[in-house]
Every structure is written in structure tokens, then in C-alpha cells.
Image (cartoon, rainbow, N blue to C red):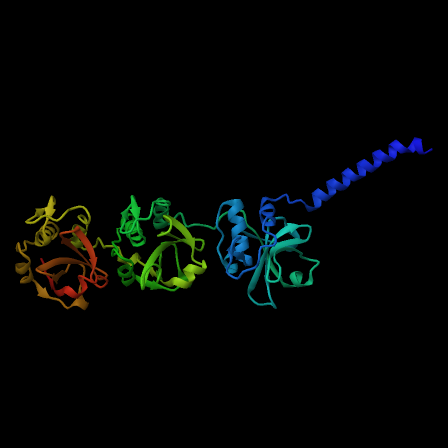
Length: 406
């Protein structure tokens, strides 16, 4: 009898073992790349503010790291912003790789985890670091669950915004201190270049001067194309800035990298944050014929001693040329003589097309274009735009203003 049953029994045992192994693999081996990556970090300690294996993880840092490693895009750094990504999933429809969010005692979101399937979560906890826990079978996590999100695409970038679209063309351009061209940028040179190229908005050259221009905006009201400012980075005071591109990110020329994107919510940038400025209103108006004519030569015509033509201008030659071309007004040849023409205007009453005189070693005449900006000629920059409120050099040199009418 034993001999008769021996071979079938062995076969049945082998089949049963095979089925058991298959079931075991099906139940416990990860099938989602996000889960595979997450499991590599089981046991790594919890650390508030941690976002890398070598420093430890908090929950949002863990989710950010895993998604970047697997899907190649960065999620925001904070729980609130992560919960705005992707699409909401009903609790009964949660799948592997979905991100679950929790609140403690009914308050604001306080924790996140990645769903592994089979009622399991993987996440960093304060007591055990990155670990696997149950979800529905755990009264704490089940009771504190508030929302699940399925995230498969990077955060939305406002690529339909002209400023954002052009700024992104310069991703990976190397950082160069003092750089202001696509061969190399520093932070304020990058911001200045993009606004000049896209919107004919001529910003001052340095971060602290750019901070003096524009309209201050609350961070809650930030829009793509606004500029974020930071203080005490490589030096004291306002020392860094970048352009907000949507999705909780900004693009900037980083001293440690190149032109890159970062999240506004990153701990470092949160600590250094100073404010937001909007520069839309700084666009040079084309309504006034004198302003419109002057703007044609910004950045196009160099300084030339004695110059009175588009081949090159000196300071007063530029003013004489513009007024003649725009209004048929023949002004004298020198700045001192030009100062004798027209009616005196108080600084607070300036209008586009008025003459502003700045006194350095000699009078430097300029054309007021609105929003504290003038177009004038300097030996270094040729025809250029200066914000006389933001400029540490030209601001104190205001001499007076005249209105010359046809």
C-alpha cells in the first residue's frame, strides 16, 4: 500500500510547496517600483526635516525621496503641498503606490505613508524609523486617515506663462558669479535677463536693488512669474532670488549647482525667505512718444563720446536725438543747456516723457519712463534703464526734473 501511494504523495507535496511559494511571493513581494524603492530603506531612522537616507526621514521627506528616485520628479517638501498633488482616491479604491495622509486628533495633516497593498503601509515612524505597519487593522492609522492621493505626474508648471517658459530654456546653464548671459548666470543676472528678454521689463542688476523695485506680494498670493527673495545665504542681507514657476517651485541660478528648480517649501529656503515681488507694472510704456522712442535703443546703442546718432550716443546727444525724432523738439546740445529748458517739476509729480537730471561729475540727463525708472546713457552700459529709487549710485544723485512741451 505504501509503495502504491508513495509517488503520488511526493508529487502532491511538491505541488503544494510550489503553490505555497507562489502564494508567498504573490503576497509579499513588491510589484510596484515605488514599493521596491521604499523597502530598501526599512530601518532608517526617523528625523524631523530629514529627506535623504544618510540623514534620516520624516514622512513627507520619505515620500519625496522615493518618488524622485523612481519617477524622476520632485514632489513638494511639505505635507500640505503633497496633498495637493495627483488625484484623490476613495478609501475603498486605494492601490499600491498611492500616498495616504493622516491627521492627529482631527487637526491638520501631520503624516504621510505609501500604500503597499495587503493592508500595509510603509513610512517612517518616530519610534522605529522606516517600517511596515497595517492600515485598516491598526486602529491608530485607520482612525487618523484623512485622504489618499494617486500621484503619477510631476507638479504642474505654468509653461503657458511667458516668463516661466523662457526661464526654463536656461535650465542647467552654469552658475557664474557676476554672470548675466546664457554663457553663465548668477541669480540676479538670470532674473534680469529673463525679464528683459520676455517682457521688456528692465530690472536693476543686483538682488538688493531688485528688491527695491516692483510690488510686494503676500506669499499666499504668489503667481507664476513673481520673484522670490532670500536673505543671508552667502552674505548678509538680501542675497538670492528666483522666479516662481508654479507647482510650489522656483527656478534660480544656484551657487552650488547651475540654473535649477527648487521647492519653496524646502527647509533651507523657508529659513532664508524674505518676500515676493511682482514686476508687471515695470514694463516700459509705449503710450508716450518720447518714452517709446527712447526704449528702442535700450541695450542696442553704445556710449560714444560726442555721439549724437544711433551709431553711438553721449548723455546729452541721446536726449537731443530722442526729442527731435519723437516730438520734433530741438533741444540744446549739452546737458547744462538742456537744464535751462522747460518747466521745473517736483520729483513726486514726474510723468513719462519728463526729463530727469542726475548729477555725478557732470549732469546726466535722462528720460523718465514711469515707476521710478529712467532711460539714459552711461559710459559702461550705453543706453540703459535705471531705477533711481533702487540704485545706490544714481538714487542720491537726483538733481531735478523738467517738463519740455512741444
